[in-house]
Amino acid sequence: MSGEHMSGNRCELMELGFSIDTWGEVVMVFYSKGEVIGLMPVGLKLSEDCTLAGRLYRGSKLYSYIASAKVAELPCIACISEDPQLFYMAVFEKSQTIEIFTEHRCPEEFCDACLIGLCKFFDGDEAINLKISVKEIALHRKTPRVFTRASAAIIEALVWFTKLPYVDCKDIERVLERIELLKETVYRSSQKNIYAKLIENIYLAAFKLVKEDESSRCGSRDKNI
Image (cartoon, rainbow, N blue to C red; front, side):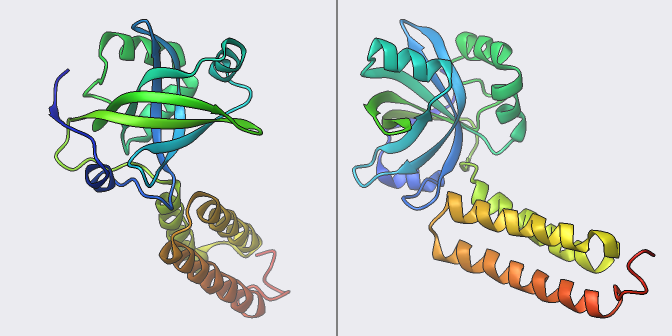
């Protein structure tokens, strides 16, 4: 496998952006006898024992296979990328993406880094719990960082907030609802206090701006302009 290699430990995983309080989004590839048997986006959190934890939800073929065959563990790769193209391909072009990971265990054109290890499976209520022991890290970029929905949602909320003063009056409530949905995304995907504070401040500022607009430029006479 191409790329720089180093042994996986907590410090190195944290340097890649993994943490105990925020889900990091990766594309997971599962192997059996050298063949790809599952590929999908998965959220992972860092555990105290320097492993990564995630969940495999009911409904996927891999979930059904693991549950019915009572599979205890599988070799796996977690592909780290901040490029949304890989996540799109993992959902809408799954067969093509599987071929890529069959030919190249860690394709450099799609993965900034890969975590190579062993994934163990444990029964849960509505999901199979994953525990990944990282044996090796392959780096293709100097400073790869795992993608997080929380940080992406905060940035998107900021973009919508800056657009609010210029949005048509008929659309301002819709923009506020959009920011509120992004706030919920942050709360679901992270327990970082700073993230919660940032998104709450953005939402409160947006709410205040909408109410001011509704009483001024978007008063009753102007709503249909």
